[in-house]
Image 1 (tube, rainbow, N blue to C red):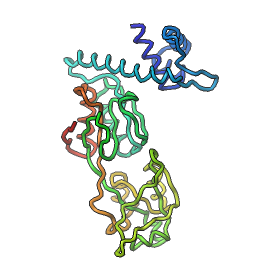
Image 2 (image 1 turned 45 degrees about the vertical axis):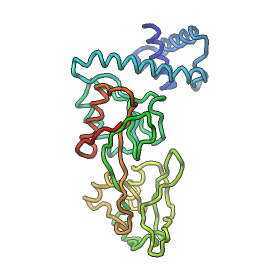
Image 3 (image 1 turned 90 degrees about the vertical axis):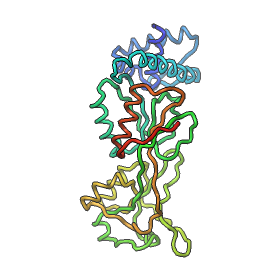
Image 4 (image 1 turned 60 degrees about the vertical axis):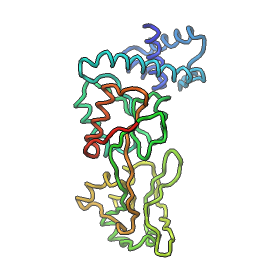
Length: 303
């Protein structure tokens, strides 16, 4: 049991990169955490961390040990979950990676917390391509089609993209009548964090087959910035429909070039988790809750 406790302390330090933060999360002092790590390193005969006055980083051996430790702790937790299923109450830590779409997921996650108080949510918001299994996530929520055969998935719903601008912006600069008119407008763009590429707007080609190339006035890697700038009259933005519904209903934003968008242009939202074993009660509760709340009725599961 002391070894298992050492694993848990090591993983906490590796994830927080801080003895102080790890101690706070575990309810012990930073000194106690440091001593536990030192004993673990002595027993293993390797250094797990590079330490300096400013930072703590994993050694190559530490990175290897982290992957193994996460799997060990995950298996122990899975065994505990199986033994406690008779209680009927999903519980335990649930580590989830989610995209940077706060307006869509945050209300759902807050409601999930209220519905399942015995589940401890550990949320990582990032648009980078995470390795669900190697990084120890229970599940990830992402857009697009699944590309990892090691994962099972469930489609949560679909969304489309719209070009929008504020009435004040259009009053000052005019309303574009065709995609080529965008050359005279300020355009607010999205850059994919994983690739660094700028998102291509879903504009249909012109009658001669030519494609519009909207100028770049601003680039960012999240929804909230583009939405804020569009609402404040800084330009035209391409945004998911779920992020602008309220603003469109209130008249704070209006659609632009709606008749020139490619159709159908829908993008799937999915929750993915490691295949090969039946989902734990906490994971099953999470999957079902997202399926019911994010986009409407739950969808079927596919392996």
